[in-house]
Length: 446
Ligand SMILES: Nc1ncnc2c1ncn2[C@@H]1O[C@H](COP(=O)(O)OP(=O)(O)OP(=O)(O)O)[C@@H](O)[C@H]1O
Image 1: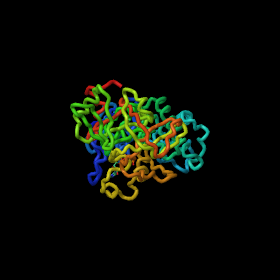
Image 2: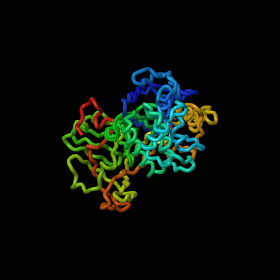
Image 3: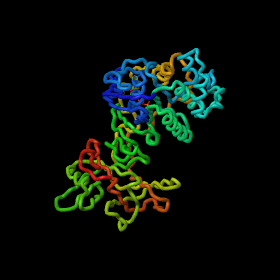
Image 4: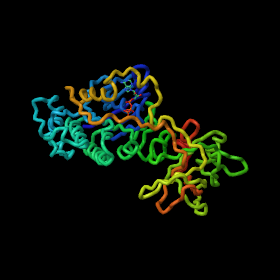
């Protein structure tokens, strides 16, 4: 059995008025895999904990299969949660750890066949008699998954389950989790701050910022048609180039985008999307260009859908199969708030979380509640990942261009840049995407 999960205008306000989740509405269909993506502190885990019943909902409704579920006890929800820090009992073998929830639920039943089935699905049959201390990080996370699936839950709630693992293992387990949950056909809500992980995993990605849902869509939609500058900047590697500009639209000559030190002429006749830019004349806009939408090539090679800028090569990152060329155009880079660091909310860190109430403390208590009673001992192998030290939203001031390794520009060289206008994003002063035109407004098919 699998579950439909709906959140209707759900808000969570922690003590001291910390609004962790703000009127979030989300419908997750049975069997769907939805990723909650956003920077640290944006409220992802809180959403998951409210679904699990580990956190009270301040206002709004949670529906499980269409039934009001705000007041259901965690144990009545038949959901399984897996955490970043695999909470395994160190003095129990993998078999005992996986079978633990069954012993609590049905102490007189033989859990053997279900444990064996879970172990087979996860490919850990040969690890069943080992203790957590004798397992690698990835193996422990598989055992933790085993403990979740053995109960045959109606949905999985996965809270950054892979962030403690090294990149290679993370990629492998990520693929395994996707395959496993699809095979089981169980609704899955997966929390991560890693956009690459989100893009590769979910049927749908819900991008959050400051407790507010920014966009819900397929990975392709959030990448190709980001609804605002935050989503554009958060999703995609290398990060989208974002430049401050104004629209220059004289009646008697061609429309251009003015970057301060140079203007980019838009081809005539103007596309319907570009015609709409006229309204922005004189206002500051943000232009977004992904690194694959720019090429270093001579103006003679310019296609009808391209426009020309000039730049000076600052730095070349050799990546083996391609190079990332950082080019200065003299344009002002745009800042986007809240991309990496939590929003500055002074009361939050000192908001009176008692020792043990932070991520670690919450983890200890959740582990006990969700895995079906008892208070499991948590083996914590690594300290929780600290938030990225990068200051919020600083976009590097060079335009990053993806180039084939045949292109070998010299540092300091002046180069022509051809921008693909079909992949040009424009955001208004409030950060909303105005080009390509949002759905419902006339726009080019792409
Ligand atoms: N028990 C609590 N009491 C008060 N504030 C809390 C509590 N738990 C979380 N918060 C705050 O609520 C906000 C959202 O936290 P949450 O853990 O849901 O974010 P997150 O996106 O999952 O972040 P991370 O990826 O770092 O876990 C943050 O500002 C956090 O400090």
